[in-house]
Length: 102
Image (cartoon, rainbow, N blue to C red):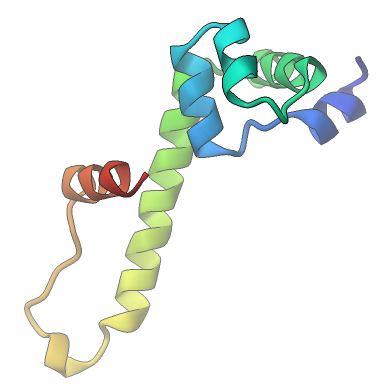
C-alpha cells in the first residue's frame, strides 16, 4: 500500500473508531463496523506506525483536540460581562459528559 493510499483510506481521525480500534481485536472491530473494509483497517494500522502513535495515543490526541475546540467555542460564546465569573468544564468533567453522550 502506498503512502497516498494509506492517507486516503485510514480512519485515524475518527475518535470513536480509534477508541474501539485500541480496545478490540481486528476481527471484532471489522464485525462491529461492517461497512469498513480490511484495507481501511490495515491503512489505519500503517498510518499509526508512520506517525509513531499507538491507537490509544491517537485517541488521546483526538480527545484533547476536541477539548481545546470546546474551550475555544466556550470562550467565543461567553465573552459578555453577563458571564463574569463563569468558567468552562474542566477536562475530566467534559470527558465524562462526552462519554455519556456517546
